[in-house]
Amino acid sequence: MKDTVEADHILQAITRVACQFLDSDMALSISCNPPAIQLCNQVTLKPVTVMMNISGCFSLDVTFSFDSSLIEQLFNVYCHELVIDDSERAAYIGETACDVINIVIGNSTELLAEDGTIVNISVPKVLVDVDSLIMTEQSMQQAVVATDHGDLMIIAMASEKQLS
Amino acid sequence: MKSLNIQVVDDSALTVKKITQMLEEMGHHVVQVSNTGKTAVFDYQYRKPDLVTMDITMPDMDGITATRRILEIDKTAKIVMITSHSQKQMVMDSIGAGALGYVMKPIDPEKLKVSVERAYAKKVKR
Image (cartoon, rainbow over all chains, first blue to last red; front, side, top):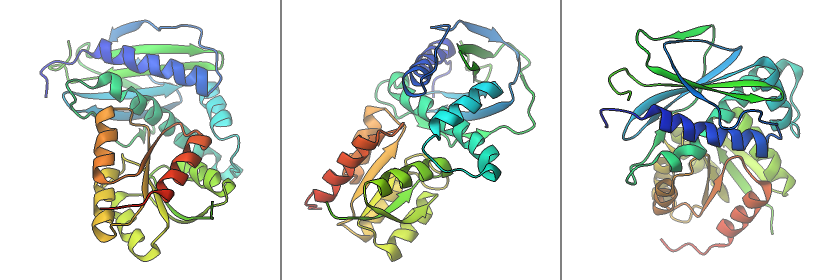
């Protein structure tokens, strides 16, 4: 595993794929392309948040945090042909968020691969009752993808030792 | 083509719902849903479906390992990977494990149809 992670390079690749997916597959208008990347040590999360780990020649946790209006719209588009009971709606909104991060991170793996090393991705998980992410040092990078239905915040977190 | 009995392997309930709907609209029957690699291998043995759609990233056993295990049990098994992984090496590893097709997520129904038809029509010599 590498000693340092070029998190801004990784985050740029992921946000690029996210913008393509939201624009082409989900028919959203992206108002800021490419989004600016900021270094931070604290992030206040939006109402629906999911996380995945990327590993291979580095290890990085990536979080997608959605405005309510955005995840509602994504659910409506992604699930429009499916019959979903009202009782299942909340669960499938979480599933939609998991599928979105899985598709975006998975579709980014070819861009993240170095020297043919396999890039492994974890199963996505919904963060429940987590309002913010706090690190002792500035070891998080975030980008906000602004759409006509709300914002998607993408956060990359490596251990402080690994970040460059 | 004839209607196939298909096993869908994916840990996402939503993706299973989407794949099932697409396959049924093509005239196939989803006879088994498995949510992990291990259960996929177990379920295959008693269901013996005509074809399996297989995710890669799953809890407890990944789809490439599950593909190898199924083919150890049944060399004639026909497996199509359905995954978000875009890395070429992952495609090569899937084909190396014995998968007969590879469909990227988000799933294009037409690409899924073509991949299922091609995989089922392939004469398997392993």
